[in-house]
Length: 394
Ligand SMILES: *Cc1c(COP(=O)(O)O)cnc(C)c1O
Image 1 (cartoon, rainbow, N blue to C red):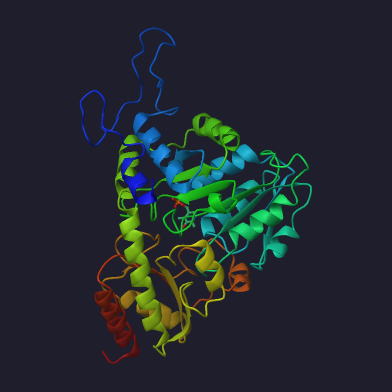
Image 2 (tube, rainbow, N blue to C red):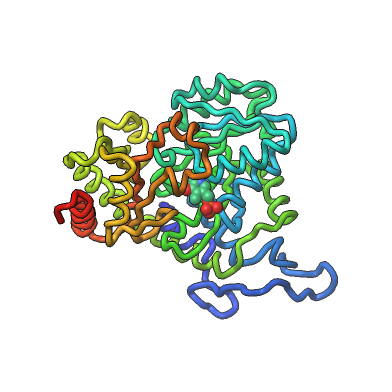
């Protein structure tokens, strides 16, 4: 089955008792048993729920994994992976250009619990691998990164990592590669096929796709790796409710269509931005001179819907642009059908200290666009009028 078919059929078989083509939303916390322990596989909805289970099966299929666990947010998914796989004294090697909330969780929560976190600034696999030692249990990367849209070569990193694993070869308790695939979605990039062990999602973004829910997921290449995460899902209980699972499943059905349009619109806007003198740099992996373009062409089937622009006029010009757009809403988050514009330095990356931001290249004059699926001409016209408004000659 191809991915577009999976998105519409896996985990959403017609209801066997009524024939309902769209499976019902199982809004129940508990399940009536014929006698103690005599049940149909469901006892209590923190542990398992049919609506959530269908969603998990669909997500696992889309990412090409063995199975998946759904969570109440992307950070809850990240947290469950960290809490269940890491022990005090162990280390994580991460690529420095991270989602701000992930950075905050690593630094403000897990470091205080005794984890060592090391950051590589360079996209070359050697730069990450040089920080790995006996204590390292997890390599954590995002690609494309947020908000700089840098590209890491997942396959090259996983090959290099395997050479560092203990002789017992694919020991799942050894060194694991986790990829936050939020920016690409499985329609554009499948890290497990490229050798990753775990895929993390903020399903709040492209997977849900309509900016109407918060959810997350962990997908695993192997069942054994997922076991402690599933245990933690039930033990700690950060599970999404059945209504959110239903909305997310509904969103997944059009993921392939939406991603095509996000990619086409983002490329149009990136090409337009390049011709405008107001922007000192345009970051989009689909532009041939983007430093990660060749790797992105190899590992992605499209370049995504995110475009990051630097205003030549710095922070004041950035603020003026994002307060003057009418279609692009000034908001956090990304991946919905509607276009958003944000100021990473004061919004998504505010939890990152200024010196860290400037070291990794998040400039105060940057705006990040989450290009939606509206008409590209309308979106460009909106940016044009916002630039005119900012220049003082509307
Ligand atoms: C939003 C986001 C997260 C966190 O997900 P939430 O659903 O907001 O908890 C993690 N990683 C990336 C890349 C994100 O964009």
